Image 1 (cartoon, rainbow, N blue to C red):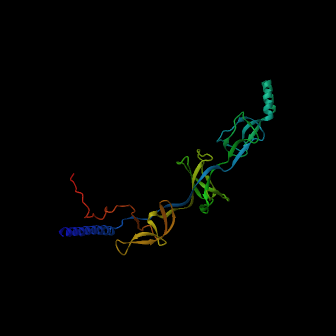
Image 2: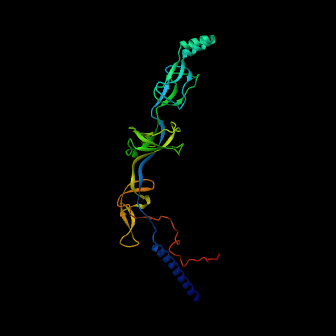
Image 3: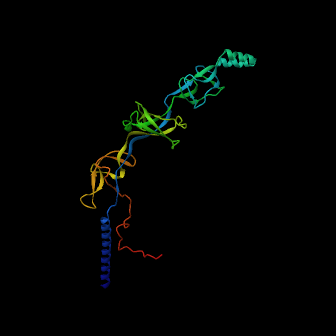
Length: 322
């Protein structure tokens, strides 16, 4: 009988300790105040943009072919060279002239020199001012009228690929920032020059091509290079800004958290009107001023028991002197 009473009392004591532990845990956590960081709006620049990819391409790409078939006698330009309209790019002998000169060469230098003066070479002339971006032939090579000898480009630009959900925000004249995948350290400013009227389907999405003309052409720009483009849709230089984490959505309204003026220690939600936002900041249009104080919730994770005291029912570690 005595042993049974001890067992009952042991169970009662264990339940009391368990209940006390649970009560301590929940009361300590409920009484623990949530930490906040106070932040004030700041004035600064913010922009809204459309980011996409593209490729470096010539605005005007002209493939040059010979009007006659024959043999290339001389190449007068190099790839990458700038040429003017009417400049001679190469000299070639027609098929008949090449055959005649080869026959005259067998009869001696004087005979060959005579026919070279009488039967003139054919010049390949640049039809436009631009840059030689392709040179497909070498001296001595035989070509036909279907062969491409050179490709000229008037200037390089970036053709950006904008999907239909963003194309309505893009306008001619907007600023853009261009980067190359091959040279990520290089950034070039540009301007939206033309928006194409016809779309093409890419991965089941309607894509519109947008020509972005760079302010300058670095030497590393090459036709066909992959590019990333950020088109600046809107920008402000003196906007009232808050960190993104300070703005919340509550009951269909955009709000920020502030300390209550009525009771110390309490917080309240203040409705605000927002504008543009980027990766870290958001613009406040109405509801706050430069001197306002906003609470930024502390989202750092803390394990139970690290704050608000210790559990008296947990085993305590004996401190040892150093």
